[in-house]
Each structure stands twice: as structure tokens, then as C-alpha cells.
Image 1 (cartoon, helix red, strand yellow):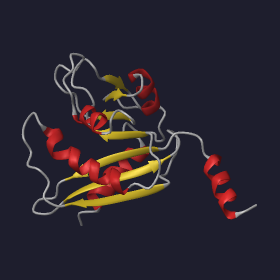
Image 2: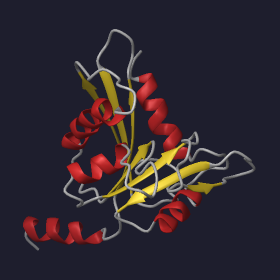
Image 3: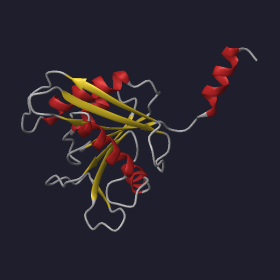
Image 4: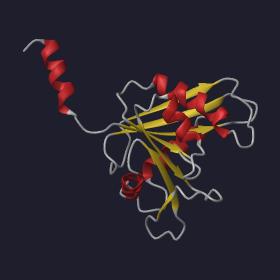
Length: 185
């Protein structure tokens, strides 16, 4: 078999989803850091690959317009990812309510021409958000709040519920948070 044939056969070996979990950190007086971990199954205990991107001069935080600060960082991260991603998990909300108020994830979904699924996993409730589905994991009595575009929100919540880890925050979401925070040292 010619090398080109082997490469195409290897490409066909994996036909499932490729997921990128993301986080962004804003160290004071330094560039923003966007981190991503790539995995292939919601139950994976470890990432297949990790990314850390420095983003100089992030936009300032403006109340009610968080996406203006974080979206460019996520776009810079996605530009570095070599894998063919079909789902992006963000730390935050996709939709802020069922009346069309867009959160960071909805803006990302639009910026990606609605080609990728975007799932938001938020650790804190956003007042009046009737779009978020609560997910209890492990023995925690404090839910995660899941929103999504490009997938039925109930399916997104079920995927987050089955992610690896015994605690409230799934293992790979903890990992991307740690990668982001450790990157600033």
C-alpha cells in the first residue's frame, strides 16, 4: 500500500466526534491566555492534545458585552488547533435566555458560521436564564448550567453529565482550567 493510501486509511479509522474544551484567563498586566484540550469521547479521562495560546492586548471587559473580550481569544485558539473539531465547549453560557439574548457561545457559533456545535458549561447561575439546563454530577448538590447551539440542549446536558470524573466539574474541564492558570506562571 502506498503511503498516501495508508494516510487516508488512518484518517478513516476515527469517525466519531472531536471535541475541544476551552478556557481563557486574563493575568493582570500580561497577555490573555486561551487554553484548549482536545478529546474524542465525552467519557475520556485525559486529553489527546493540549493547546495554550497567548493573546496580546485583549479587549477590556465591558459589562454585558463579555463576548467582545473573550471571543477573539477563542478564535485565536481555534486557529491553532490542528484537529478537525466538530464541538467546542466553552466556560460560560451559549444563550442567556430563550428570548434570543446571545451569550459568548452564541456569538462563537455565529462567528463559526454555525458549522460547529457549541456547548456552554457555566459554574454559576445567570439570573433569569431560562435556557440553561441544570446538570448535577457526582455527589454535588450545586449544578452546572448547560446551554448549546448546534445540538439539542438536552443532548448537550447528557453529554456533560457523562463526562469523566467523580466530582461536579468534569476531569477535562478541570484540566483546561488548570492549563490556562498554570500557563500564566
